[in-house]
Image 1 (cartoon, rainbow, N blue to C red):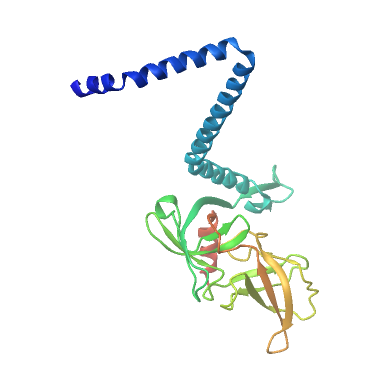
Image 2 (spheres, rainbow, N blue to C red):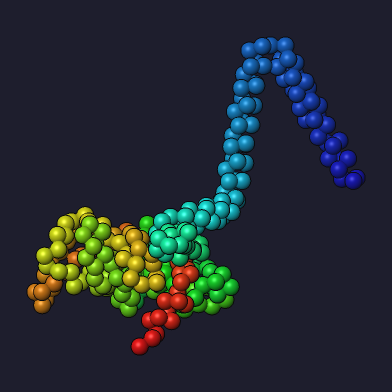
Length: 273
């Protein structure tokens, strides 16, 4: 405290000067309208800048929560789409002869690690068995199909993407309904290939390629990509189609895991001889 008073004593002239300057400045602001308007304008600008910076900082800190809320909202919207329901007709003798039953639900997740330049690419997501995830569940993204879960731990899951030659899914040409296996050839991560398409199929560049619902991985109608080009396979009996993939795996962040509510019933039938 003694040093504090000594400092005040040594700086008394400077402190008197600052006090008089402040009083003179306040007098000018109060008595002169032009100076007052300029002062108010300057303080408003400074205050606005600080409030804007504070708002941006708050928005950044809340970004994670907002993204999670948006992901949950996307899940609810996706679960309300027709592709998540199955139309059933029970016959004219029943009271409610037709109804829609939900088949698919979704779990939102985030990509925490991935590769897209390797031969056998992979994706790691931040949800696992505690979130209800299991092996062989399909994974989609905001732009379309991503891959299928291969391994699950309590809190994480490993996904084999469609840019991995070990994964094949059934793909359908949306315009005419022809389908074939989608297989990545290990070259461009933005392209894949569909094989065994009949040569008489009317395939055009730009046609949409979607899932066909023949597996429990994905509902029917999820976008895979678009036709880029066609050529005859080596056996000359079928077409091979190059597909421009809708999902850009170099910037994939948010995904949705597909849960098939009918999987146990379907598996029990598929296992029968």
